[in-house]
Length: 114
Ligand SMILES: [Cu+2]
Image (cartoon, rainbow, N blue to C red; front, side, top):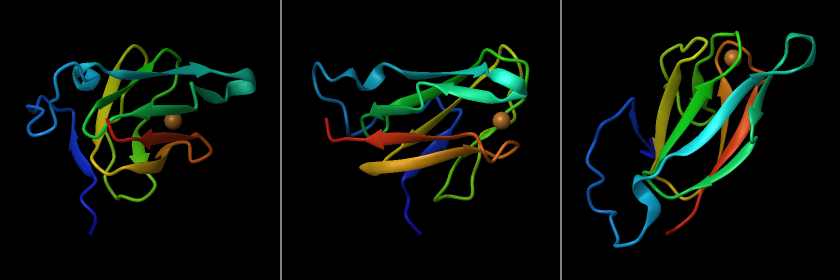
């Protein structure tokens, strides 16, 4: 089992990956907005982050969502309007992410070396 998913809703120290000047402690933010005809949209639908950098989804719409990496059977808690959820990815590469409630909500988190 690949251990690329580090933690959910974390306040973990960023052990072992801190380099001076690296933006690892900044979040990568993805907004979730209501699209046309009741759909939900990721803005942006593709983000780039460093290993173990926090990726945060902010729910700016009216639905309730839960983010799950396609390759890993763990998801965030359900988060409703005005709430957010976070994931970290440890493994370099492009990781597809979807919403467990709305499988047509898909996006990509690409992890690159710092
Ligand atoms: Cu959803």
